Image (cartoon, rainbow, N blue to C red):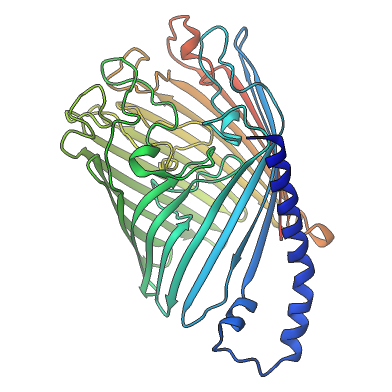
Length: 471
């Protein structure tokens, strides 16, 4: 993209924000003086709409062990979203975001030792065009919504939250979806969700992809025979069907069931139960259980085994447990996850992060089978000081890096440490939030003195400094 085009977009966006700010006060005055406004008109619905704006400054760096390449990126961006008020129970929403690469390593050049490309920092920008620094804008919301009493139906570009399709908001912009999404609340205890998705815009991209086209935007690892995964551009799927429900049995005890059908590729079912039980006046015992089952549909995406996504000879079963204790603003949790040796647990990373209790940001066990994982979490909040802290440790026992059948991304077993500190400003600076997130991952298995099993995976420090402003 040209610099001129990027500058034009920045100027256009700045003017739009200025008009937005200047327009708010006259509208408010008009609404105060015009008490007899006709609430049945489209004009009234437009004036009753809501604007939301967001600016983000994000510094990210990864330090690999020598002589492997280190990386950094400083990104800035902003966006605005407008949703009309209701007109005959209908609303329209539209919103977009732009991103600028203020400074970064050359993310287009692979590491000189391994030939492997950058993993984390490129997700701040456009993975399809690492040299694009000036014009990364994306239409993120463009939908029509109908809501009345206990039902809401949204069609178009939007952001949804499900166990396996979700924003995974760990970069400048989250993952977005296009399709039909429905939420129904027949009672206070029951929530039902469902829809059909036809396009995905993964984080770290600026385009919207058809569902089959979206699989392979991120690196695909290896197939079960050790050759490079070759499913990118070789799959056919018309969409993703999702159906989910949550039932609150009693206060503090709930269950949920999700079914995700990916046309022509695979099917995933997940059951989850979570509970809290009071102990004394300030304490709670926390518990949770998850079971996930996957199977391929027909040939898993392609009749050619070298081009398929989900090998038809495999299936996946995942068990995840959580136990813990909460006292006042402190939470301690211990978690465990087991993926059986039946096959790899697979879910396109372009669609969202995994929901397992042992998940710690900046790494996943997706793509692996025969996994044993444990993690510890300590969370503490100081509400009056508007501070939140999280400390995590995890140990992930994965198959050997040369066990291609069960280790898609050639990831060695590892120790995972995380420290996260968040601060929310108040008063004049209300809406401003700051976060520091630090991760260290240490190898815990044989890497055969081959740096391709190390770079961007283990023996690395990873730092994030994030400033958000919402208004």
